[in-house]
Image 1 (cartoon, helix red, strand yellow):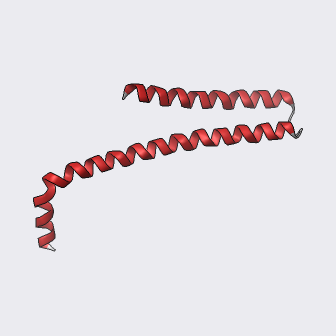
Image 2 (cartoon, rainbow, N blue to C red):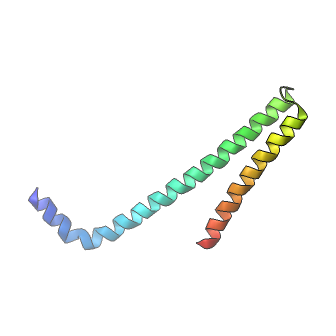
Length: 88
């Protein structure tokens, strides 16, 4: 056990930066996945809304109101992603 700890201390100057880069990569991937999931969920809701309207389950006024809200939410997410990309 002590040998492994000693080995870890000796290799820390080489492995610590790599571990840090791997951690940063994981965080970026988590953030991107979350944003894609949000956009995908909004798109699915929009499709579901369109199907409900096409089948006559909801009136046109309600459809237009909900559609506008979903499209604005999608646009806000896209704007946020573009703003983050331009900062990097």
